[in-house]
Amino acid sequence: MSGRAESAGPAPRSLTGYAVAVLRAAAPAEKIRLTRAAAAAWRSGGLSEIGEELPPNRPARPDRPQLLPPRLMPKRRAGAARAGRIALLHALAHIELNAVDLAWDLIARFARPPLTQDFCAEWLAVAAEEGEHYALLSGRLAALGAAYGDLPAHDGLWQAAAETAHDVLARLAIVPLVLEARGLDVTPAMIRRLDGFGDGESAAILRRIYADEIGHVATGRRWFARLCAARGLPPAETFRSLVLRHFKGGLKPPFNRAARDAAGLPPAFYEAAPMPAPAAAKPAGALTDWRGRSAG
Image (cartoon, rainbow, N blue to C red; front, side):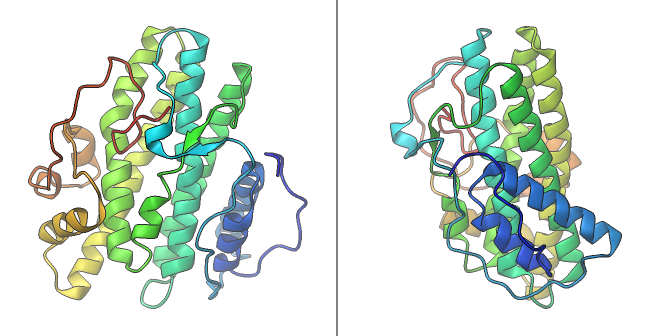
């Protein structure tokens, strides 16, 4: 299927219905259209039923980009040249599109009592912001004469969803508190590079994403704490245990302490977390995703 929006059918009647519709939509434009429609209907009160629809095991994807295992991704270097900036923005657009699906999967998979109205409202807001991030990056790629799908992308981002599909606490630990928190660590350097290249338009988009992602990590931290309290579990120790069990490679410094503090993520969560074995240094300017792997 192409990246163009698919023909719209009847609007889903429940929030989990919207979630399943987004996850089954292959075209990025349709995922964003449905996400915007759901957010608007929820805000207006036209959508209030949570529903019981269950998500597919894997979201639909367009024919392009070609999805490769992370180890087979071609190495690209970020630079001032248009090709380098396109590679960076394309990698980020891929991450944000996956983030839309991850937020909706969280709602469809785990929005059952006691996780109902408040839980859904907060994660719908996250899904909506992730959708706007993708739209901004897609628009910027178009301004540079490129499009999402022009370059290959790695197929490792959905692994976190599959690994944590059994437990909302594990999902919250790995997605917002590891992957999105990693975004807080690496995004400031990307912004500085883009500013240095004279690409203020792209830098401004990343600043918007960075500010929103602090809120997403804060949302994850808040719900992680609530669930730990409900289960009688110590939050920091539980987080470290879940990282050890579900996140290959452990957490990698340096950590953006200021942004993590702003999100309410205590150092006890990550500074004492399992650490990866030392790896060979990457070339200066190499692109990395939230896991610290090559983002292509």
